[in-house]
Image (cartoon, rainbow, N blue to C red; front, side, top):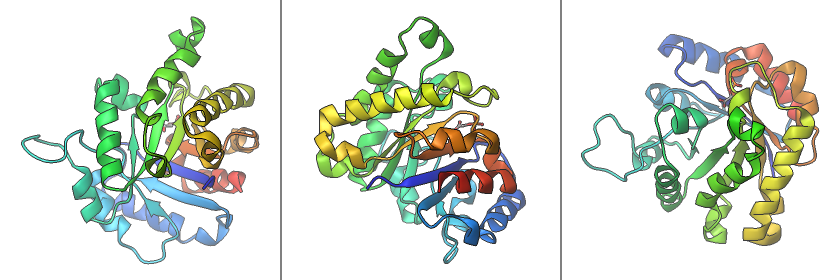
Length: 249
Ligand code: PGA
């Protein structure tokens, strides 16, 4: 179902107390969330169990990453099964920091997608070009390549996919894609999904990410193919994050 979604990616920020406080502050203001917007946060693995198991928080707790293997001798990794066993139903895959800082390949990312699909988990699948790709006018090709991992799933599995378009040059830089640039790429992504899945693609949520803030959220989210946002820095500030959530409603 094409839903409006605002997801906060906390990345590697906050200790246990700070994470609980941030979550509680958000939870205490859940009445301000527009009823048609699904709110998600992705804290560190360490705090998922604590935060995912609070009753009626109105906030879906999701993972930032998972292993590209099901189980076994992979020191330091966390599997999709482990996440599922503590009540986590959704996971971000292919974030640009995973692709570019940790060298995750298209193949690694495709493995994660398959593992999560086999667990019947929801995936927030991130794609995004680098500045050099945009400058050389190859941004559509890059996004098209990155999308390949989700373009040949069974239609029933595709229901569990949310796409997030996050231009790398706009992440954590203060630089945002213009609403027109965002819309243009979201429409392209929807077209690719349609070629693979037909009209079912009209029901997929496509989120924008990259320096979303209260001052630009309304304009970005009002674009035809932008269904909400994946928010990094601004999700660590309760007031800012709530303003962004309201902007999606
Ligand atoms: P940002 O991060 O909002 O801090 O740019 C977005 C993201 O990485 O998901």
